[in-house]
Length: 116
Image (tube, rainbow, N blue to C red; front, side, top):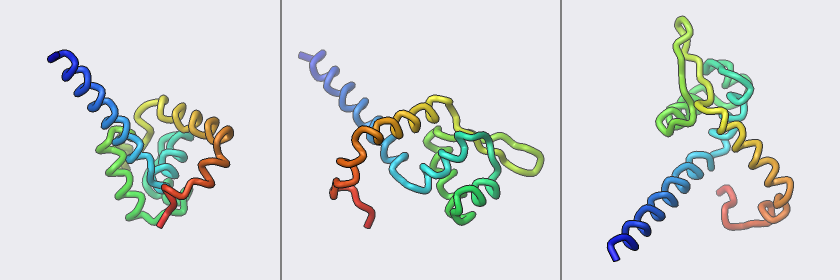
């Protein structure tokens, strides 16, 4: 009986980890930042230029992405250069695009997760 509860707790913990990851990816600004970082490491002003986001917005979302482990940083002289922390992030984003090629119509029609 104890094993059943332990298995349920482990399953619930795994589901919550997945949910946290998807909440981290659910912001369009964070997805834009990850998208440009998939092309290679960049400093903040380069991210601002490529995404069209404001510098404070980029800095705020980079902090979130760093805290979640999706982005890493390296000092480059007086700048900090940001990069995706794992090539699997780029692969995940590519897989999402491939999935959207199949289910985009349903996703577009879904009213549950529309922007406010």
